[in-house]
Image 1 (tube, helix red, strand yellow):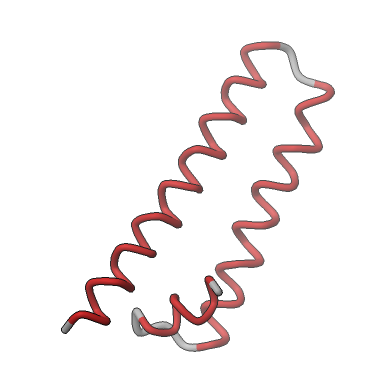
Image 2: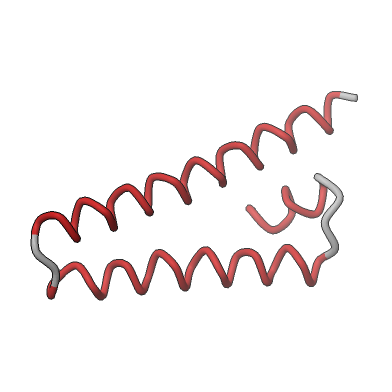
Length: 69
């Protein structure tokens, strides 16, 4: 689970859960806005989602590196 991996990187449980809530809120609000946006806005939301996914992957890699040490 993402929360367990975030805790393994050194985050507290509370901070890990707050980060997951923030990521979920950002992705969810972007998804809700997609219906009412024009193409340029939709592309911006897609880049936002890709950025968030990239952040999650970087945190995942940090967790894997910490476990190998």
